[in-house]
Length: 104
Image (cartoon, rainbow, N blue to C red; front, side, top):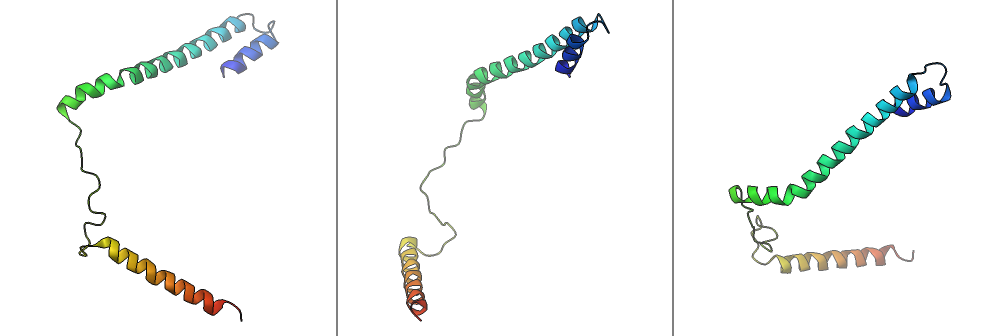
């Protein structure tokens, strides 16, 4: 919109003698609004670590232990052995299917 008004005023300055200054005011005010919004975003990002340090006093970060049980709902005490057995059976079945589908 700003560029359109500025282009129209620059293309035909005799049609409206006050159109060019008005277009410049609109363009500059638009740039000022966008620039101030970007400045506010930069300031917010810069102050975010301080804000988080203040809020951490009230709501501390909860640290959870990593490396817990992979499947807590599982009733099998040793999941690795069961998974290895399932993988072995699947491998054997795939090999058997490849051999039976091989040369006809």
